[in-house]
Image (spheres, rainbow, N blue to C red):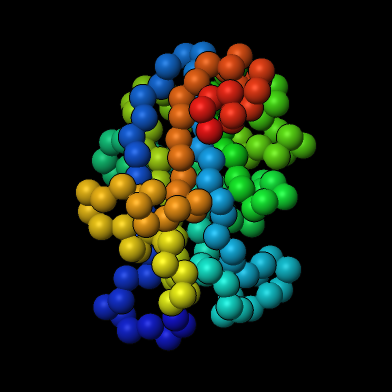
Amino acid sequence: RGGSPPEMVENAYLASIVGHTPGDVVVVRGTAPTTPDTQSGVSPATPSQLRYWSFCTNEYRKPYPVSACVIDADAELDAGGAYTIVVSTPQDRPANATAANGVTWVDWRSTSVNMLMAFRHMLPAEDFAENVFNVAPGQLASEVMGAYTPHTATCAVATFESGGAAACGL
């Protein structure tokens, strides 16, 4: 969709608000859409499902300061193209929430306010219907996005350590 008119929306978001509970982690899992590997010099206009995607956490207070972000190129993916993101404070980071275990860890940062988690999709291919742009306000993302839906669970650190995302219901 390069060269789109200025009135065209180029980014769409899914968001969720989560409160901090000591000893718990937030786990997010889904299938990552394909994106061009621009970090290896591939043109951003190379055909793919999306131009770019990201997962960010923000403090849920105006002006919603960004706490941390993971861009598509930095997300750990398993052999099937799925990501597992764990958000926690450093002291609650599960021992297995590491890149070596296929997990992308995100520091919760400030726990004094709730966290706003946001997934961003940028410039979907016309034939990639399972994107955030096609989720109507109030509609369940899973009705449109299928395997690309970011599913979220909260569980105890020990639960994640004992069995990963599956132990947390994902």
